[in-house]
Length: 374
Ligand code: CO8
Image (cartoon, rainbow, N blue to C red; front, side, top):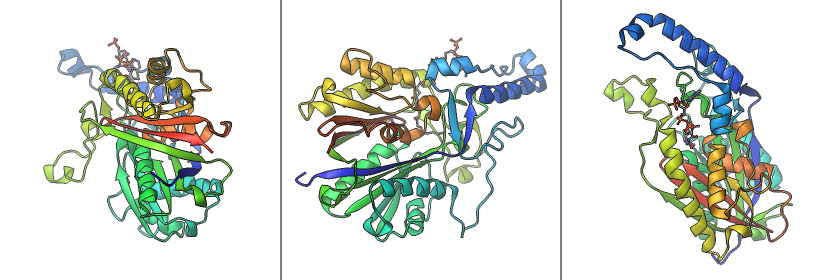
């Protein structure tokens, strides 16, 4: 690209409520105990399995997750409910997801010194949108007083990096001058809090990023987008079958297969080498080696995945200063994890330092950006 295109601001917003592993496991185990008591006859007859117990120690050791933010804590730990209890909002009220998006967007706009008038495109990109239409992005656009256009896109774990790729290309093509890309990851309604293998994985958060040409950038910290790279490869190992056609098939829209579920071990084994290869090839495009990258803002699904990927690239375990971990506090936040790491850990970089944002997960999908501090 002949024009220098930059990230000129980032925003991170988290809800006020947290749930620790201990709280989550206590609720899950109480539910499992009640379930097993109520189904004692069928369990004893061998026609169904007893629900296994969860453990806070297992969760921390297997994933690195200790706590997570949730948009709404009510209902999640109630063993007769095990899902958040939202108040339904009217059509003339801001939707929950747009509210999260606007909160993160305002922080990013302040960082980039932009008002709504400076922005001409909004992308809302995440694992799920609260409704199909009107797009959440258009609701956000109205709320922030932005003229131009907005659209939603879904790429599961890589929604944020793929949106930044779109933003970069739109600015490069001249179809937009300044793009606001937002990732309101409202995951908790889709978590199966009754599934021992996945009840601990996700948290809610919103991130936002401003992308524009270098010539219009006035922010204190900005990064040249040196290049972007994306790849997808179909896998059934992470799925959510919830969709608008459930009504037509008479399927239970709340059954376990309609919620997030995965073969976690297979995902771990297949995605780590894919991500390491993808990153290695991406930085090699610029004659860079892994040792030339000062900061690795990686997807935050599992601490052991990040350790393995950086070890494969660097030939040693990266320090936390090189590859920051945020999933201990935030859990897996679908596509937002790498951008949480970026938002919290970039200001110390020096002019000319390289950094890499990379997401990897459901799809499978992998997206990366090579950045250079200006
Ligand atoms: N408590 C106690 N024991 C447990 C628990 C638990 N909660 N869960 C499993 N165990 C037991 C198992 O039964 C097993 O016992 P045994 O050896 O006797 O059979 C043992 O612990 C080991 O189980 P696993 O092999 O399943 O455990 P792992 O070490 O593989 O850890 C993880 C499980 C943490 C899930 C791990 O496999 C992992 O992190 N994998 C990668 C997952 C990943 O990256 N997924 C991507 C997620 S998708 C995404 O990021 C975005 C999707 C869109 C957003 C969705 C929002 C809702």
